[in-house]
Length: 431
Ligand SMILES: Cc1cc2nc3c(=O)[nH]c(=O)nc-3n(C[C@H](O)[C@H](O)[C@H](O)COP(=O)(O)OP(=O)(O)OC[C@H]3O[C@@H](n4cnc5c(N)ncnc54)[C@H](O)[C@@H]3O)c2cc1C
Image (cartoon, rainbow, N blue to C red; front, side, top):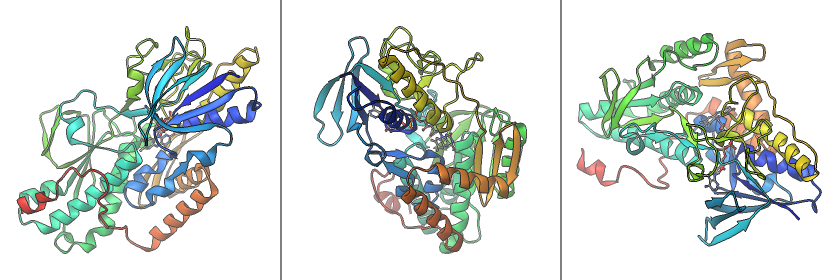
């Protein structure tokens, strides 16, 4: 029986596995899915989880609950031989190393934050890509408030209360909006901060926010954020980052101890190691329009780690919207290959894009390039993503979180999970 191995349990990997389960008879192929987390993260709600509007656990869905007969392995992939069809992985919990052979391999490993090789970015910035990032960043923001409320050094307090967000795309814009909401909601608990605003600065290298979308969307997002006191700097990229702030290409310097990096992503580092595969300059696996990798029979790729031609001279964008459509299509093509039939090119027209700006405001591009803004867009965003969140239990939990948020301020409990960048002694050393 042919063995089909899927790498990655995100939007793309799960979508392929589910359609393969439905399309193939159990004795037609053995299905194996490897992923380093045992859940799928619903990234569109990650900024809200970061700001404490949503409980982090409510935006993840266990992989095992989404699959029926695919064998799930909680593992990290170490080495892949795409020519001889075997790979090596290690179990995340036991670190036991295993070699797995395959007939078909599907790359759905997603992406990771890209620092574009700029000095200091990897060491001194915070990402918002994983569930852990969201939890660490929220703790950091609460920690900043606690420390700023404690110290007497005015200069340091100003630096602590300056939060920089780099990248004016969807993630950066939503993160800026949600950070503003979190700080506004809890400021009243900090006596010494009550009468002062934290400074939030959104930095974008290009001339507008939400580049590549109708200009009205970027303009509206800017107006809403600025009205809430968030500074928006466009047309000036980051040159370097260090522990006390960043320097822009213009030479301008902004002091801050919390810089959130949402300036871009690159395909998973695991793929960078696969030298045999054809890749774009950005590092994504080049596929044909049917998502097979030319010259490598049995190798397929989709989602953020793939460069899939859109048939009009471009590539499909790296979004969940596309990944969940590519998955079923790839599964149909793979089933066709197993049955000796021909594959079909993937064709999809982007439905639109949306961003929630916090404070019940949003901006959305609808089919036909129509743009809606304000409460209507925010409501549309919430309804659409609530319906898209996998699992009825998750939908109910998120709806409940949103209802509670209407009545109560955000939670300021600082939960010390994982690694903290600032050792506890710092409070004592820097009064
Ligand atoms: C904050 C944020 C907000 C976003 N908002 C939106 C939005 O509103 N709308 C939208 O369409 N898109 C949005 N996106 C983009 C969207 O999340 C991605 O395009 C989508 O997740 C791509 O799906 P994927 O399956 O290719 O990758 P992922 O969902 O990233 O899944 C990759 C999987 O591979 C696993 N993996 C990686 N490396 C290994 C390894 N070596 N071994 C084992 N497993 C591994 C990972 O753990 C993960 O489970 C957002 C992204 C972010 C970060």
